[in-house]
Every structure is written in structure tokens, then in C-alpha cells.
Image (tube, rainbow, N blue to C red):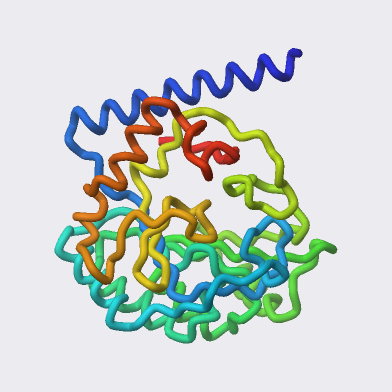
Length: 275
């Protein structure tokens, strides 16, 4: 009973905080994209049991973003003077795309005010790859997945390099974690957390995040790993037009009115968001 009361109180106060944040943004006229994820290839080589798209799960139809589409996205963000977070990955392992370093370099040169980030399991990254890509990044997470909590053989050299270069430790987070870790439910799709009760509080992701799949289609959020929602298509329309579209607005209004309970993916999601 006490735990249920604590959970209710937490959800109540988080919800009030989030609605105050949205009201503030709307009053300021600043409801703009703050996070963009561009998935350039929809594959991961990891076998993490918390991930809906791990290599052991049924795979999505293979898709790889064309270089032309990537350049189009960056050009539009440049026209917008985009200064939010840009991640050239989503529900995938970014180093499965051999263009990934070049893409980050291109983004850095064209979007000097953006905050570039990357999350990788590091299994395909050599020391020279790390040394190059880190120059273009503001933030990097290397998730070293090992059930014995040991540094993987191919990452030992990078880990040692980080120990010697303390200046990189503010931007690079090296995390050792088990593959079978239980994390969030990912909209009820996490293989090791299915059937989890969602939390019916206001989620901020539709108000600040855009996730672009390799085809150019836009997903609901980062938890829409399988692309069950399509809110637009970057190959056909402009980013800003999709962001301000009826599809996005319907999701936002439903979230404001009824929170998550009527959104098929959101109602089973236990992800919490903070301003």
C-alpha cells in the first residue's frame, strides 16, 4: 500500500511539473525540436534482452538511408539554425554503417551549434575510429555489455586511452553493464519486461523529439523501435512541416488531454521524461 502511494505521488508531481513546462513553452512560442535521432541503418549486432530490436528478435525489413537523404536532413536543420541535440543513431548500432564517422563530420561542419551525441556498444569500433569520431562529438556513451562486467577485448585499448586522456572524460561515458539488464519497458516492447504496467503521466517526447528512420519516415519517439507510428516522411516533406503537422498535433493534444492511456504504444510505457 505504501509503495503504491509513493508511486502515485511521484507520478502526480512529475505530471504537474511536465504540464507546467509545456505551458511555459507554449506561452513563449518555443515549442520546437530539441532532440533529433537519425537512424541510418536499422540493424543492431547486440543481443541485449531489454531491447526490442536486438539481434535475437525478429528483424525489421532492412533499410539503409541514402546519403542524399541524410544531406537533405542536415541542410534543413542548417536552415533552421538547429541548436538542439542531434544523434545519428536510434534503435541501431551506429557503427554498422561504415559512413558514420563521415556523417558526424558532415553534421559538425554544417551544424556548429548542435549538440552531437552517439551511443554505441563499441564492438565494431577501433581505437583510430574512436580518436577520429570523438573530435566531432559533444557527448558519447560506450555501452560495454558483458554479463561478467568485464571490459570487452576490443574495447580495452579505448578504455586505456581514456584513462590517459582525462580531458575526454567529460564527454565520453564508458559504461560496463550486463546484457540481461532490466531497464524500461520501451512501450511494452522490451523482451524482458513485457506486461509491465505503464505510467499515465504526461510524456514530453512528442513535444521535443523527432526520430527519423532510414527510409525518411518519422516515428513517434525513441521507444517506437519498430516504427509502429509514422508521423511523416522526410523524403517527401520538410522537417518543420512535419513537426507542425496534424499528425504530431493530434498526439500532443491526446497526451495533454488523456495522457498515455489512449495511445497504443504509450499506454504500456514506463519511460519518465524530465524538462
